[in-house]
Structures are given as C-alpha cells and as structure tokens.
Amino acid sequence: MHLFAHFSRFCAGFGGFMSKNIAIFASGNGTNAENIIRYFQNSESVNVKLVLADRETAFVLERARRLNVPFACLDKAAWADGTVVLSLLEDKGIDFIVLAGFLARVPDCILHAYPNKIINIHPSLLPKFGGKGMYGGHVHEAVVAAGETETGITIHYLNEHFDEGEIIVQYKCPVLPQDTAEDVAKKVHALEYEYYPKVIGGLLSEVC
Ligand code: GAR
Image 1 (cartoon, rainbow, N blue to C red):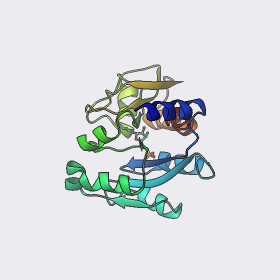
Image 2: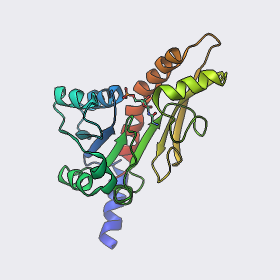
Image 3: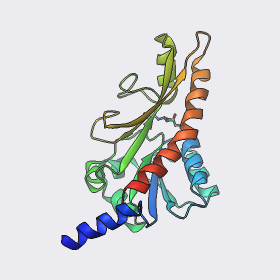
C-alpha cells in the first residue's frame, strides 16, 4: 500500500511516464476511430491496440485493417455477456477505452473493470438531444427541427445510463437558420476530429 502510494505519486509527478494502451469501440463508419488512430500513430505515450465493433458491416473494421490495428467484431450475445470482450482487453493490456460512434451497451463487467477509464463522444451539447435513439444523424435532425442556434459535442465518462456519465468537456458551434442536418453534421464532425484526440491525450497524461 505504502509502496503503491509512492509509485502513484511518482507517476503523477512525471505526468505518467509509461505508455498507455487504448481500445476503440465503434459501430459504424469509423471516421473518428481513424482520426484517433492516425493522431497517435507516431506517439510514444499512446498506442491504439485494438478496435472492437458490434456489427460485421461496420466500415470501422476495414479502416482498422488498412491501418494495421488489430480488430474484432463480436456478436450481440458476446457484448451482452462481456466475458470475451474483457479477455480481449486484458490480452492487449488495454488501459483506457474510447467509444467513437459505439451504439451498443457496454457490459457492466467492463464498466467495473475500467472505472473512469471509458469515455464517449456525443454529437450534441448534453443533456440536450441525448438518450436512447439519439445518435449520429438523428441528433442533427432533431437539433435543426428544434430551431437550435447552437450545438456541439460532449465528451463524457461512461456510466450505466446512455449519455448520462460525468461531462469532461463540451465544444460548441453555431447552427444557422438555413443549415440542414447535413450542414450541422459537418460542423460537429469537424469539432470531433479537432478535439477528441487532444482530450484523449490530455486525460491519458493524467492517469498513471
Ligand atoms: C459521431 O458523430 C459520434 O459523435 C456519434 O456517432 C458518430 C460516429 O461517426 N456518436 C453517437 O451518436 C453516440 N450516441 P463516425 O463513425 O464517422 O466516427
């Protein structure tokens, strides 16, 4: 205990000198996953070690293959149970999990194994336009239909409830009267690409 306390302080003092292994969970196209992989490609402190998906048609799997990142797709039953997911994470020595357009529920055993070490990005300013069914394009359509004048992204820790974990940071962009849902999606994606990797890097330099 005593030794561990010293070790933790030592790590904190150096901003975390050991490299961290991250896994990305995604369900769809995977443009954020690719952006994160590329951002850390030459990093000495962060390694993207694994991409996991929950549907075989997810294009993120092809992106991972092209970028030489190990990947796997698990079926609904495996995600519901969590045992196989956990053993894959352990095999790769994963320290931190990043959700990038992942739509399934993360099993409790993973939440418990990675307390405050799983983050999600949501394409709105939570708590607005969050919750079940609010993902991807549906969010932007709802933002335009509601006549919002601004929207943005929320990066938050994951808990048992969709989009309700502690908020880490939000970034905003304007919604103009003539904007379509596609226009809003472009602005929101631009914020995601700019900030998600930086926030991940910042968080990882704080955890030992
Ligand atoms: C992103 O905009 C992400 O914020 C959103 O899905 C999109 C995935 O795009 N996530 C959610 O809606 C989660 N509720 P990508 O597959 O191109 O990265």
